[in-house]
Image (cartoon, rainbow, N blue to C red):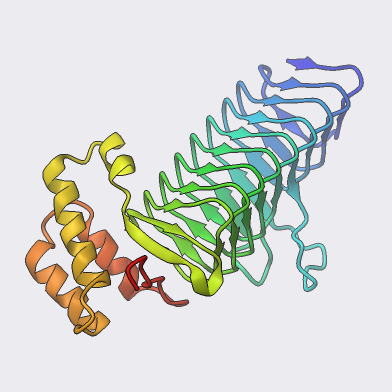
Length: 265
């Protein structure tokens, strides 16, 4: 274990012998940190918090802090972070609330860039990228391999689907379905199409991408169809193909409503 002499470690913290703690970092009570994780200078990790293996916590990051919620009265909620994540400098990630899930959860292999904010009760999947100053309000859910651009703000309780791509300086108030590209602020937010580059990079072949593009056109560019009829048609014609049922089910389970305006509207 490599702990700088200026670091402050609470006696209750459980740190693997291979953990590295940098100058002036603070590790609070009820923090568990697994093998190979590195905490850089001046970072603060508060508990209850469980940090997996081989994570990087950058300088001045605040990880596991109390939720920014007026109803919170010090209850023992938690943050759970998986393996191989980069949490870069000045990031802030908060624990859950008793009235929510009771925990904030981050998966594996995420790149969370400088000044990002993940609020209480969020659930972040695997291989997610959040660019600088991207901000998630409470209870947001982000699917695997989603990419969120810089300066994006996401309203509480929104969901962002698998492999969705959110353009920079966007403001989201509704759910973003899987596999699409979205950009814009509030009522100007538009879906421009399928995230073909992201799909190709993640193993979807040409036919699978073409099928998803056809489903996209049925759902988003069929003005004479009600949403329920568009979803029924898409399921009837394409349900057996990769990703299609995930997209259709996303609409059917949305509570906030899904962004449907496109760049052609």
